[in-house]
Amino acid sequence: MNMWALISAIVFGIVAWVNPRGALWLVWLLIPTYLVKVSVGSLPTNLVELLVMVSAMVMVIKYPQGAWRSFWSAVQSVSWAGGLLLLGLIIGTAVSPDLQLSLGIFKGWFVVPVIMYWLTSWLLGREDLNNYISALILSTIPLSVMANWQVVIQQFVTVDGRASGWFASANYLSMYLVPILLLGIILVQTGKPWQRWVTYLAWGLGGVALYFSFSFGGWLALIGASLVWVILYWRRRWWEWIWGIILPGLAVISQWDSPRLQAMVNLTARSSVSVRWQVWQTAMLIIKKHWLTGIGLGEFRDQYLSYANQLFSPPWETAILHAHNVYLQFWINTGLLGLAGWLWLVVKFFYRMARQFNSQTIGLVTAMSAILIHGLVDSTYWKNDLASLFWLLFAMMAVVTRPGERAN
Image (cartoon, rainbow, N blue to C red; front, side, top):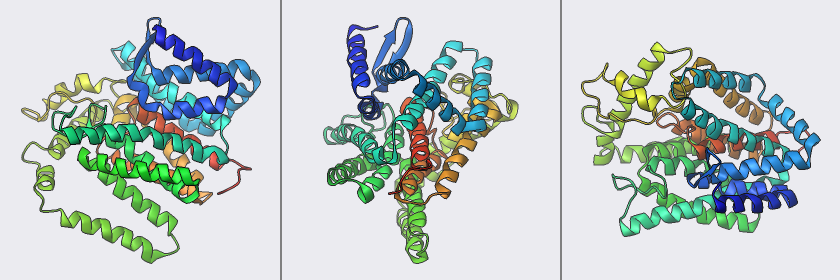
């Protein structure tokens, strides 16, 4: 282990021992630090994974009986849905020719986020929720500042001149920002004054960053999820949510003749939509040939071109990392069982909200809706921070709908 990583682990371990909830709050705040790579012996990892594992080990050592009971409770809460997803992941690992890559995906995008889910559902109560959402909101501020600074100095990480913060893609920026900024609705409605002001700051900086990311999927998720919030929150005042349909519709119509939008929807020339259209058709061909098991975790990038060449001569893009659709990506990576398990988890999430309507559950559903809507055009799970965010939303919903918790 690198010396600075060892020191970080020791210091964080002491913090976790003295104040477990405070340590977990820091984990939420530092989710974007998955980009800081470290190693434990020969095992590659990153800073946030290291902090999660240290926190889990401290809790197991300090509270062995409580750790076992809470872990078993977390397992029961995902029930058969989690079992199906686990089976799909095992199959996806087994069929993958690159075992090291598959195990890394299994660890980083499932094991670590599930541990975060377990710790959250164990340590938090409903009264803690706003403080932890504040950590997520705070995590967006330096990211948005950096993205906006890229615009000011006109120096971008992306080749197409779109704001992305420290991510390699502008879409990565929007996939992280939008669900978290929507969680800010909960703080504005139920939070303390400082939490509301932090949310307003994050909304301002994040809104500008989102605009200059020029992420169609991000705006689609923001508008669609906001409409979900309007319908749920004003469900007894039909005239309110009708305007929630009309206004976004007018916004789209007003931009219909813009050159950028017309270029995006033109399937006869190379554009983000035409590239995605080819990627989706290629993904469906892969699924047709491997509908049960998929092709294995992390294999889409390596196998994409061989399948794309069967449909297009030549394809618009020759190197594609993912299927630009979270549902297709789950099917390709984990097979039919993994997709079914993940979708079942999503259904369980919404079912929990249906049993208890309040500002918190509606806010959580709004954020999850952004992930699912954006997932139609991008892979909104298959990345360390996005996977963590999905499981934290699931954990927060489990906490606020737990029997005995007082509604806000």
